[in-house]
Image (cartoon, rainbow over all chains, first blue to last red; front, side, top):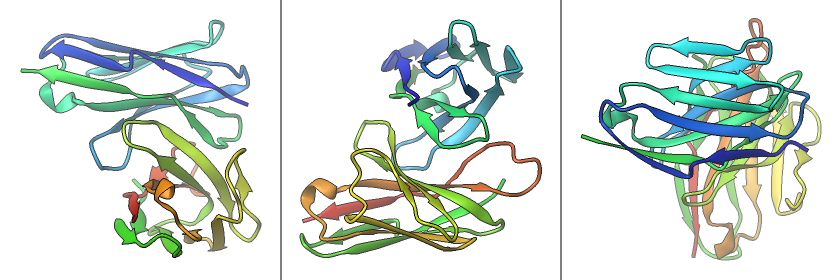
Length: 112
Length: 118
C-alpha cells in the first residue's frame, strides 16, 4: 500500500520568513496530493491540492510543487504569519480518489 | 464547501461500555465515508472505509468487531466502539467524499470526537 513520509516534524521560523515542508510517497499510481492544516483540537482543513498532471500550483502565499519522477511533493509558505502556526499534513490518494494516506505531520511555529 | 457534522464532540465513558459516534453529511450525499483515528501529536490513521449500503472495509490491524461501522444512508455513518478500554481513548474523525459535481477528490472532515475511557 501507499506510504507517505513527511519532514521536518517540527519547523520554527520567524514571521515573514518562508517555510518548506516536504513529502515523499511510495505508490507511483497515486495522483492526488492534498495538504491539510490542523489547529489544536480541530478538524483538518484543506489548504491546497495538486494532481499528477500539474507540476506546480499556487494560491496567494501558498504553493505546492510535485515531482512525479522522484515521487515527492512540497508545500511552500511565503511571508509566514503567526496565524500560520499549526500542524500541516500532506496526503496521497490513488486514482478514483480512494482513501487518503496521510504523512506524519509537521508542526509549524511562526514567531512574531 | 460541503459540511460534515460529527457528534458527540467529546465523550467520557467507563471501561467496558460502548460508545457510538455519528457522522453526517449535511448538504450533500456521501457515498463513501472514512473513519480516522488520531492520537495526540500524531497523524491521522485510517481505520476503515464506509460505503453506503455495504460492509465497511477495514484497514489492517483494525478489529472490525471492536469498531463497528454502519453506513445505512447516504448522509449518515456511525462508528461504535464496543467494550471500550483506556487504550481506545483517542480523537476519532470522520470524513466524507461526495458524489456531487465533478468529484474533485476533496475530503470534508467532521469536527472530530474525543473519546476518553476511564
